[in-house]
Amino acid sequence: MFKKIIIPNEEIQYRQDSIDNKYLINEGNRALGIFAAAAGTVVPTQISPQDVCFYILEGKMDINTDDKTFCMKQGDLLLIPKTSAFNLNFIENAKVLTVRF
Figure 1 (cartoon, one colour):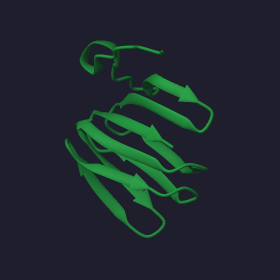
Figure 2 (cartoon, rainbow, N blue to C red; figure 1 turned 60 degrees about the vertical axis):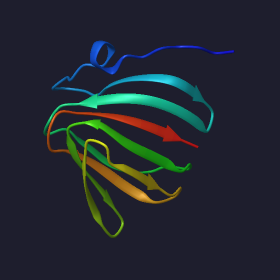
Figure 3 (cartoon, one colour; figure 1 turned 180 degrees about the vertical axis):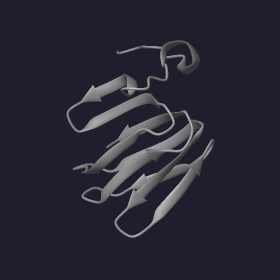
Figure 4 (cartoon, rainbow, N blue to C red; figure 1 turned 90 degrees about the vertical axis):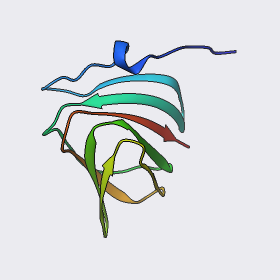
């Protein structure tokens, strides 16, 4: 049995030049992790072969999909279906829980 504790405020830091991430699970097409990105960070458009769920732990970010922009804040949850194009734009420093399945 795999066990690991991640405390976002202690282990995940904002970096101006990259995204900090920690994974609880990262096995093939399944992943559960937390990442932090500084305000102004942009993640280019990508297409995931799995469904991806984003849960905002703190901060604000925009998630742009094929046809809509979602303005996300703490407590918001968004599921992006597999094979959908999306990109991320961090409005504030943000920490995000992601689930890929």
